[in-house]
Amino acid sequence: MTTPERTGRGGAGLRRYVPPGRLVLYGLLCTLPMCAVPRAAKAANGGGAALPLAAAIATALRVAPQVQQAQDLRRAGRYGARAGRATLLPHLSLIAGRVWTATRNGQPLYVSANGPRETIGLLNLALPLYSPQLRALARLARDQAALARSERAQARLSVAAQVADAWYQLALLRARVRIWRSTLRSVDILYRGTRQEYSVGAAAVLDLAQTRLLRHNAQSGLQQALALRRAAQRTLNLLLARDPSAPIVMPALHPLASPLPKEPLWIEQARRSQPLLRIAARQIAVGHAQADSVRATRLPTITANVSYGVDAPTVPAWHELGWQVFLSARLPIFDFGAHRDRVADADERVAALRAARRSVLLQIRTTIARDYGSAQAAARAYRQAAKQLRDARSVYDMTRDGYKAGTLNALDLAEAENGWLQARLRVASTLVMLRMAHTQLRLDAGAYPGERSST
Image (cartoon, rainbow, N blue to C red; front, side, top):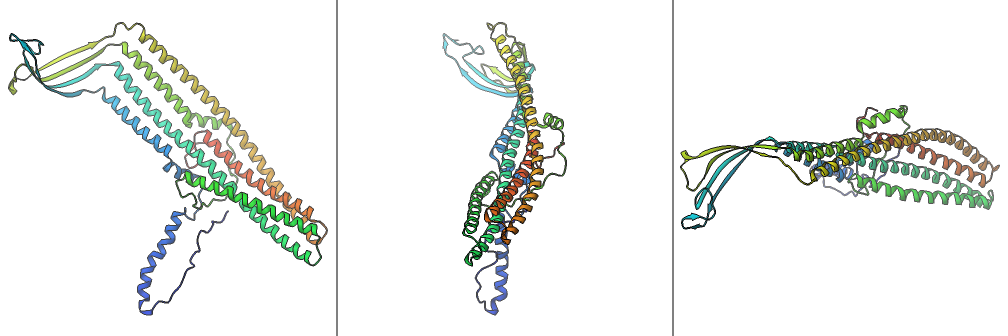
């Protein structure tokens, strides 16, 4: 497990003399600030606890703007569905006005309520008795709201995949930094010992130059790894909406104890949970609703209206107000084939959406097959790398002992040192690749670390 980096001087600070009479008061005043500052600094810098992948994803899902955008669109879709249902309910409105018309020889030029003046004050209730298009539009709004929910799930999955990639990249680079530091300490001790032996004539100049070269290579490798780690740490901090320079403590990575589920189980999980498939299905439902709304334009529409009030040349008293009920029907007859073409266009779009869903399913299955093979290969590579690490360590120990005894030269030691270094780097890389392959399979199936999954 990596050790948290220290960002301050700890409890070191200036001390000064305090008169005895003020000691108690001074202690009471200073206790609270001195306790609060380290906690505030720890909170600002990300804390000292390790940051597992599930916690990093959960943090990113709370602050990611694309997730917030999808959430806003989901709420908008919910309001749209409610508005679509409301169009099928009765509507109450108030109509009020006063109309004046010009007259000629005592007769109004524009007849309105049989007089030159008209008073309108009606309370109107409209009820769609039969409106297939309104019902189709209401269903369309409901399907669009469901599509927005699936798109929100896809946005969350995309953010989880982005965070997982950055998290594993940082974990790999931190492991490399740790390996390079260990190598630098080892070769630095070796170089100092060789220099002392060279000063007394017990080592050749080639041995001194070779050990110096080993130390230089270790320093160069460490500097490159540190630069890459800083960049990866800034990337992950930005995804978590934190200070880019805040330290991140990574937990130790270990191979998964549970065996890798079979490939058909991943495919079955993807059929149930993959947001891309749900989006494709919702898009087909939206296409059907749009086609139904187009077809409904050729069907009759029947509306009932009930009005109460006045529409007359004079202003009646309240007990003279009247009411009326009337039914209206609308039936399109001929539109030069425009309706037929719109229906054909909507049907073809639905067919295209069905083909797109099959394409998405094929893409998901091929992706799972490829990533499943990568996971199996990563498991074999890790086992092989662990075996090579043990052999490389044994060779390095024997070569170093032989070099110190004078039976082997610095070239032999450099070769053994490089073999051990590459073996450790290979173990770190294969372990991260193994864990990343398992995480990628979960992402392919529509889940991510921290989310409950049946697979």
